[in-house]
Structure formats: structure tokens, C-alpha cells
Length: 294
Length: 252
Image 1 (cartoon, chains in turn orange, green):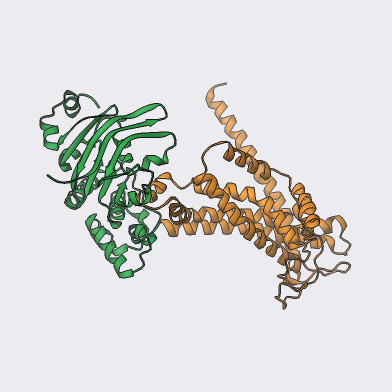
Image 2: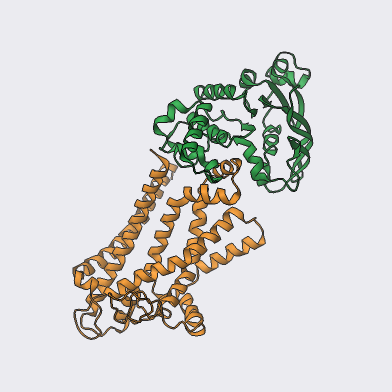
């Protein structure tokens, strides 16, 4: 067989594999959207759920998902940012940083159900936080931290060393160079990383089942005092998220329209994550353009 | 005789075990341009980077000997690298404007130093860009990104950025080797303008460039300073055989 035919066969094979991947993805997405989108309505997106009757919505779960996401990001972003800056800009290559990097690798490949059970034992039981948004947010932080740290470190790596030298040669201290030159330059790519990891956090279920809980008590959207139990802002209330909701109605849902609600919720979840991804690309590109060209 | 602003005595630099500078003794008068020439790997860039302690950033570098700036030891334990680099600015081979507007690039050093007076900043921007001979080309789009400029303009904005913090010495590490001939000659014209007000030390691969702009030229080879003299003498009547061979293109 000559090399030309070999080449053709190889390219054909690669096309086939790539096509198969796309096909599987499209089929999956198509199935979720086709069965889910018809269930969507304003009522479905805003109404509270019903345990035994038809016609419940996912309003509270949807709200919980966002609230939990924001809290988790508020906790994990500063830590991840600090860790990434330390690792990339300051740390020398020695056994300490190697150990930290290995720990991050391991933490990022930890099954999320293990993170969830750890969160249950530590935050829910040991620290007496109970099934609460706060426990969930901490568990999500554990889940999110390694991914976010890695992605921010990668963003810093994309900024060329000549920028660092430029800053230092101008009489900026190392810290000023990092905060005033490197970070602003890395913002578009950091933002993309944050939004993409937000997508993963948004769809996470296993880490939340045992931490944020599986119940969604009714919320009073007129009460914004975080200390009231029915307030949407209360971080100590149990909060079932959309992803957990899907898992729960599929395993023990007893409402007559469980199937429809599950399909609708899945569609909402998938659409939200798609929107996150598009937003990440769009914002990243736009910011980069604004920073780099006329 | 003019005052010596920067002196180096018996300067050795090691990358790990490898000796890259083998006892350099070289002094610089105030004002004027000194060119450092020599074949690749001769230590001229390494030497330049010891003068504002940029080699500190590289791990495993050992430096012995003394470098004094206006009589103060640059490598004294009490020396403040941030302050040193404000007074001894540096322009690099690759133009490296920050990904911000031209205006922000030029005032970056001052703004971080805490200067807020808009009028003063405006004045500094204009003055620095004029000194760097790029004002006329960029004055109408100061608030556009510096990355949209051509390589030569970017390099002159980088020079303006260094001038804005009013250093005494400007180090340039092959500032034109990434640029086309037209941009290069504009940078040279810029440097000739600046030679009356600043002490300029430039590393260059381009012998013609050294002969065109430098008052003094120093020839480096294999980590040693072979010869330093008035540029005219180096090119017309070098004292050392190696210098002569290099200048006449027999190697390098």
C-alpha cells in the first residue's frame, strides 16, 4: 500500500470518528431539547413544584441553582485566583509547588459524589451547617477550586513574559506588575474560564444531593431579609437545585407529570449551560477586542 | 572630563556553572550613546541586563563584582530594584506595549506611582511621545489600543513609556532587530534626539547602526570586554586584532 492511500484511509478514519462524536452529541442534545422544549412555559419556569399533583414548575429550583452558583463562585474565585497567581507568578519550581500541583490534579479528578459525601460529613454533620445552601456552596467550592485554579493559571500562562519584563523594567514591583499589567491582560481569558466552570457547577448534582439537600421549601420572593427562613437569600435553608431535581423526580417522583417535568428541567439545564458557553465565547472575544484593537 | 554615572568593576556572571561574563570593567559617562557589539552569545545582552538587575528574574544566576550607579552599589543588600529600574529604564528586542491604550501605556509608570493630576499626565504623555518621535503619528488616537500600531510605532511608544518615568539611563536590548529598515531608522533618529539628555546604552547586532549613532562602542567576545573606545576609533582604527576581524566581517 503506498503512502497516498494510507493517508486517505487515515483521513477517512479520522473524519468518521469525528463525525460519530458529533452525531452522538447531536442525538443527545436533540433528544433532550425535542422532548423538553415543549414543556417549557413561563409558568413552568417560575411556579413552585408540586409533590403530588400535575402542573408544578421548577421556579424555586432554578432560582436555587443560580443562587448556589453565585455563592460558590464568590467563595471559590478569590481562592482560585490567589492560588493561581501564587503558583504561576511567584512560586519557584520545587517540591512544594509540585506537591500543590499534584494535589490540585487529584482533587480535580475526584468523583463529585465523593466530594458530596465529604461535604455531608464535614459541613452538614461536623460543622452543623445542616442541609443548606452554605454547605452546598462549600462542597461546590471543593469541586470547582481545582478546575478554576488550573484554568486561571493557564490564562496567566498565555500572557507573554515580555509583558512581565516590560512592567518590571518600568520600575513596577512584582505585585504591581501582576495586578496592573498581567491580570488586566488576562481578564478575557480568565472570564471565559470562570463562565465555563460556572456551567459545570450549574449542572452538578452528586456533590449537592447530600449537602444542599433534596427539598425546596417554598420561598417568599417579597422577603429579602436573609435571616428569615422563607427568604430567597437565606443561606441556611435547604435548597434543591435543578440538576438535583432532575435526579430526584427520576428516582422517586410521584407527581403524575414527572416525566414531563424531568424533560423540561433537563432542557432548561442544557439551554442554560449552552448559554453560559456562548456567553463565555462572546464576552471573551469582545473584551479581547476592546483591549487589543482600536 | 564628564562625570561617570555608571561603573562596573570586575563583573562576573554565572548561569549555574557556566561563566557568561568574565570580569568586565566598563564605565559610562553621563549622556551620550554607547553601543555594545559582538557576536551572538558574547555576553553583551547579559551584561546589559545586569545594569538594571533584570537578571534577578532568572533562577541560578550568580553575580560577583561591583556595579555602581552614581556611586551607589546596585547589588548592595539595601538596594531597591524597583527604584533602580525607575532610574535605569529598559527597552526590549520585541516591542512589548501593554494591551491598553497608547495613553495608558505611556503614563503607566506614573499612574502606578500615584500621579492623578490629569493635566500633568496629559503633558507627560505629549512630551514623552514627542521625545520618542512618535507624537505626530499617534496624537489623534491616543485612546486606541497600542497593539493596533505597527511594530516600529509600538517600539517608539515603549521608548516613550520609559521616558515618562524620567530615568537617567536607558538600556536598549537590540531594539530594532525585530523591525523593518524604515522603522529602524526612525528609532535611530529618536535615539540621536535623546542622546543629549540621557545616558543611552544599546546592544546591537547591526554594526552600521552602531557606527551611525554611537559616541562610544564596546566590543564583547566570549564573555570578555575586548575593547572600548570612541566609535570612530573602533571602526577606523581598532587597537585589537579581534575587533578588527569582527568589524571587517571576518567572523560573527
